[in-house]
Length: 154
Image (tube, rainbow, N blue to C red; front, side, top):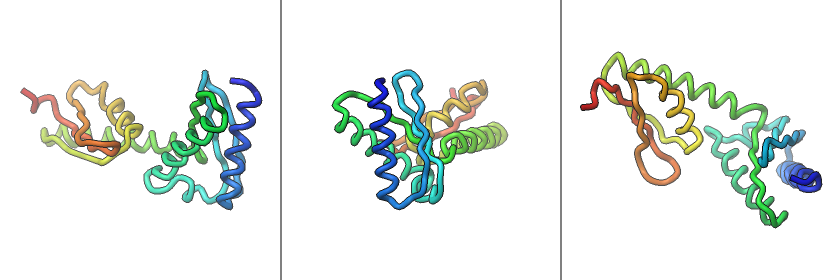
């Protein structure tokens, strides 16, 4: 990725955040072909939203803006004050706790709905447990997850 593309993306985000009335700093890093924007500042709740849904929408819209402006494919990932790492840790711990409950009760448990990123974290957290399996249920972006004890499956 060229340096001017890198700076254009950063400038676009700063302009967007300024228009929203937030006092923030944007740190941009390149990992492979993907660009990661870490936003640090105040009013993080406005940028993150409930369960990260606003952040997810902001990332989607920003990617559309960037790709229209640059005329070349660039994938931008956005995080606010380390929210995504905290969310992943929280989901992993929740999955482990619920997995233990399913094993004790030997009864399936359905949780959610979750977006695809959150579902992936939960599936991966329980993948290594030989006594459990998981499956996604539903249609569309927001799906539920069923945690099943393998002693229940035929």
